[in-house]
Image (cartoon, rainbow, N blue to C red; front, side, top):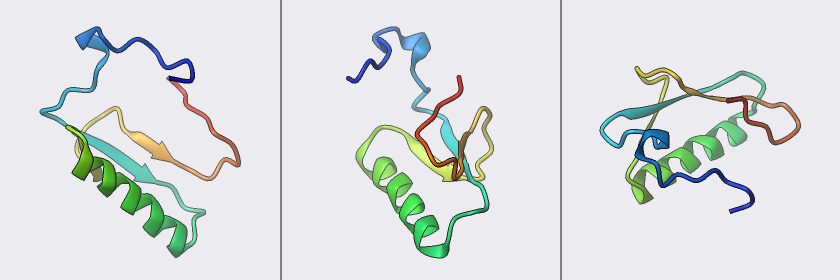
Length: 73
């Protein structure tokens, strides 16, 4: 949706047997940090993926306050 890539190819999907690591950069207040962590927990609870802050895997998701919506691939 919204121009999302075709993920019917299994080589383009994140493996479900691996943790999806994320790092929250500085610049967020405690309320925003808590909301971000709650959002990752929601997706862990409601999808086939497991998200872990500062997890062991690379690549990882980097959450930072950039003032816009962006994704570098």
